[in-house]
Amino acid sequence: AEPKKVPEPPLDPEEQKLMEDYVSEKGGIKLKVVHKKQTGRNNIVILSMEIEGKWRQKAQIVVRSAGMPPWAAMLGMKQVAEQTLSSGNTENIKQCRDDVVEAIFSKTWVQYMQNLGLECPKWATTDLIDFVSDRQHLLGGAN
Image 1 (cartoon, rainbow, N blue to C red):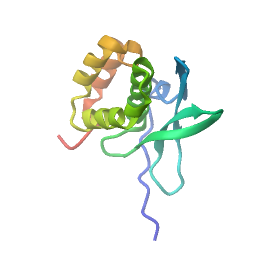
Image 2: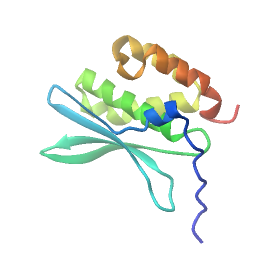
Image 3: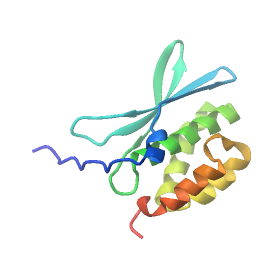
Image 4: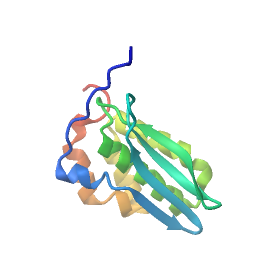
């Protein structure tokens, strides 16, 4: 018996905007963030790095109906991408991913983004911080 896949709730237009694929490049490092639908399994968000002309997966976030909506996984991974590009350190991708996921699940993402915005404002603007703040109830463990 296949485990039953819980359907993801529909996204509002603002959430939908965050679902767009993202490719960014700096200092010879090229990264891509995509949402990947999977049959019979949870969807995932993948961060890939271009190595010798091929995209290689470096990290993923699993989308969960409880606590990790697809837009949160996408935004979180875009934050990981920008931090990686701004530091130029590709060794820290998994650690960065862990930090973002931890912030989302522990409901400290707003604070995390406020700090991130000081060095990497691209995916941590005040608008996005407000956006996450308004949706805090959809994130992380049960209140």
